[in-house]
Length: 231
Image (cartoon, rainbow, N blue to C red; front, side, top):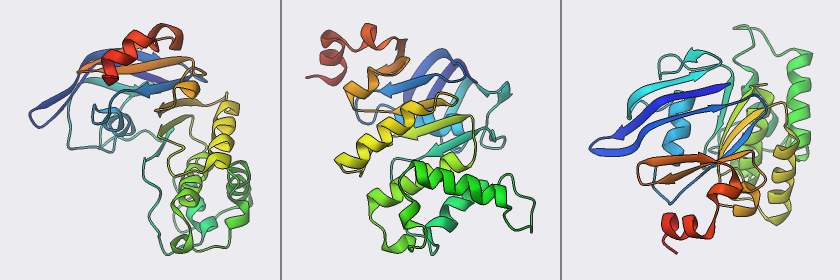
């Protein structure tokens, strides 16, 4: 599903990542972890093909296709760290934007499109918000709608940047449980939650410009956490 081949990332004079290679198999869930500012969000944006500020060495492939800001993969849905801005749309209309890549231009959404939107909103607990204006919703509600939009796309690879940010305790657990059920999806997500990361297939742990790839038991040790987070 995802292949990183000798990937290096440089932002201006700052080297963020040096020579990292890894693969993400269909249905695999991987946590990206590391200190603030190390490059986790940048890595996800590069994989999504939406960051043209970063100098890229090596190659990113999704489903065999090389990814660049001019060649973005359609199999990928990206949910940023910050919730969706309060657009002048109703919540259901916002989630429906996730179907635009598959809808013919100038044609209205089909019953199948609306069914996928309804399913995504039900899974994220946002169906009760369908008729609400985005501008009237809280950050947590907009965050759940952003994830509903990603699910509505039908993408095979989900890139989630701190998917529980802004969520209260109830909906944090709803989101953790929901993502755990998406076994048909490949998921790469930035996390700061050690317990959740330990439920993932693998962990990619930033340490300086190196990115370590391994099982949670191997990487999330007390020694590694002390060294990476300086605690």
